[in-house]
Image: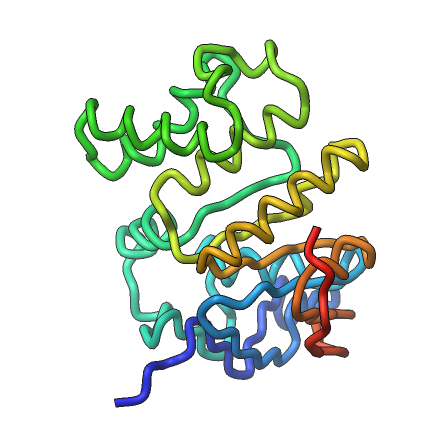
Length: 235
């Protein structure tokens, strides 16, 4: 039996205000395959469709038309509860704005997805501590977000994303709020996760950041205009 691709999009459209003068085709007939263990940058300028692409791939939104198969499973056939389960178990999200809860410590923020999965206190605390240690924040476990630098907050967000050991990491402009040195550290860590087997999807408008991926899928006006693999010097 042939193992299906991790991600398969077939002629996918995401249309807003369909049939009206203000109709917007955020995705316009996109077909794409991504295999297990790839490091793919989804690149494009503002309005290109890359954020919509991430929302569809991350099961945060569903296509207007077309098919999306995740590990061979037709996403359009899933219930909201099943989609939520996929987001919690199979996908780790990293955002530009960190999305940490200000009143919770770094450890408590990392624990959140584990709580949603119903993991017992002792086990989830150990998993959260392990994730913080992996990103070099073991000594900041009891700190609130306001007590950490931007780079430390982003690393806490990465720890939260990897705490459940998801096979897919989706990083949306993960270095956008960081200085260049700290941004490179974050990208280097994503490369490390990829070497360890994680599939990385990096959403960015920055060509320099896209160049750190092994494959670039470039969007414009909701369509793929470029898809190529490249040699990468690891950071």
